[in-house]
Amino acid sequence: MTDLTPSNVQAYTPAEIMVVVAARALAGVRTVFVGVGLPNLACNVARSTVAPELELLYESGVYGAQPARQPLSIGDPTLVTGATSVISMADLFGLYLQGGLVEVALLGGAQIDRFGNLNTTVIGSYTEPKVRLPGSGGACEIAINAQHVYIIMHLKQRAFVEQLDFLTSPGHLQGGTTAQQVGIPGKGPQLVITDKALFDFANAEQEMQLVSLYPGVTREAIAAEMGWQVRAAETLSETQAPTTDELAIMRRLSAGSTSQRAGEA
Amino acid sequence: MTKVWGRSKLCVQKEVEMVDKRRSLKEAIAEYVRDDLSVAIEGFTAFICFAAGHEIIRQRRRNLTLIRMTPDVIYDQMVAAGVARTLVFSYLGNPGVGPLHCLRRAIEKGIPVPLAIEEYSHYGMVGRYLAGASHLPFFPLRSYLGSEMPQVNEQIKMVPSPYGEDIVAVVPPLHPDVAIIHAQRADQHGNTHVWGLLGVQKEVAFAARKVIVVVEEIVDESVIRADPNRTLIPGLIVDAVVHVPYGAHPSYVQGYYDRDNAFYLMWDALSRDPARVGAWLDEWVYGLSDHAAYVRKLGAETMERLKPGSAPAAHVEYGAYP
Image (tube, rainbow over all chains, first blue to last red; front, top):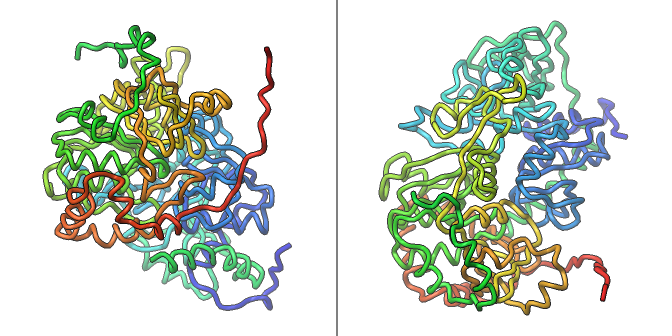
C-alpha cells in the first residue's frame, strides 16, 4: 500500500499533486471513462496504487486498456494491443456508457460554473466566436450517463466563471434537483480536482464548495482564481502531499510519453 | 431528394457483386467525389485516409460538405485548400496535440472561405450514421439534456418517450454521398477485414450512398473467408477498392504502422501560418502525382521509425464442417 506518512514527502509540481489527488479519488473504482493527458496518468497511477481492479474505458472504443506507453491520444494503437476488448463507438456509447456501466468519468473544460456545468464549445458567442473550442466530443453524453463525474481542471479565473459562454455538458444545471428534473440519470459532478485545491458538491444546492486545500495554498489564493465567491465546506482539510511512492510511480508512468515526445519533436 | 433509401442500388447489387472493383485512387475519386457532394472520410484517430483527402485536394473539388466525427488534420488540410463549404462534426481538435488552426481560421474569420458548421456530440454523430444505415427516420439517445447544443442545431430535438415519462434526444439519419474507409486488407470485391479501433467505420459505410475502401493490402478472397469474423464491411456495399500502402499516414493502421506524432506536432506549428500551409500543400499535395510519390518523398527511414513491434493474436480455429 501507499505510504502516506508526512516524512515521506518531497518536492512536487502543482500538476503532479493534481494527478495524485485524482488517482486517490479513484480508490475502489472498477470502471473509469478517461481522456488523455493528466486524467490518463491519474488512472494509471490509481491502477498501480489504490485501484488495482480499475478498467480504463476510452472514447475511441477500448475497454480494459493496459497501455505499454503513455498514450499520445485517446486513439493511440498502444491502447488496443493487450486490451480486454475493442468495441465500436456505437457499442461504447450505447451499451457501456448509456447502459450505466461507467462508474466514474473524468472530464475537463475551458470553463466551469458553480454547479459543475462545462463549456468546451466556444468563447464569445456561438455564431461569432472569439475562440472556437473543440466542442463536445463525447463529453455531453458522458456527463449525463456516467454514474459519477470527476472534473480535472487547473484553477484559473478565466476558467472558473460566474456565467458560461456556452453550456456544452451539463453538471448540476441550476443546482438542487434541476438536473434530475430534466431526466439526467447520472449523479453528475462529485469532485473538482485542481492544481491548488479540491472541491465537492456535497450540499443541498449541489453547489461547488472548497473541501481541501493543498499544502501551502491559502484561501485567499483560491478566491483570487475564481469568478464567484466560492463557499467552503463546514470542515476544511489540508490535502496530504504526494508521497515518495506516489511520485515515483507517477514519474515512472509519465516518463514514456515525455521521452517519446522529446524524441519525436 | 428523390432517393428515400440511402442505397437505392441494392436490388441490382447482387448481379454485379463478382465484378473486380479495384481502381486507382485517382479513378475512384474522379468517379465518385464530385463537386457539391457530401463526403465522410471516417476513422477515429486510426485509419484516416489522408491519401484520399490529398487526392480530393489535388483534383480541386469545391463546395463539398465534409462529414467526420473528429475532423483531424486531414480536414484541416482540405478546408485550407478550399474544397469545403460545410463541416458536420462532433470534435474539432488535433488529437493529443491542440486546436486545428486552419479550421479555426475558417470558422472564426472565413479564411480562405467561410465554412458553415453543423455540430453534434460524438454519440449524436454515431446515432445519425446508425439511423442512416438502418433506414430509420431518427435515432434516440440519452444526451443533450440540459445542454445548449440543441439551441444551436435545430436538427437535434428532444421528444417524449411514447412508452413513459422519459424525454430523449433524437437525431436525423445521415447519408453521406460518399464514405471513404481505410483498412488493413480487402479482396477485389471489397470484402474488408479490419482490426484495431472500429470507430464508426461499419456504420458510415452502411449509411453512405457510395463506398470507397482503401487498403494496405489486396488479398485473395480465401484470406477473407478464412476469418469471416474480421470482415467489418461486406463487398455488397462497396463500390471501389483501392490499394494504397501507407495511405493513412500520418494517421496509423494497427499492426502496420504507428501514428506519426512528429507530423501532428509539426502541423500544429506550421498551420498557425496560412502561407506555410499553402507552401506545404504545394510541396506535398499539388506537387506530387499520387500517394506513392508522397511515400517516396517521406523516405524509408520514416516508415522504419513508425514500424511497430510484433504482437500476434492466438490462433483461431473455425473448424471444418464438410
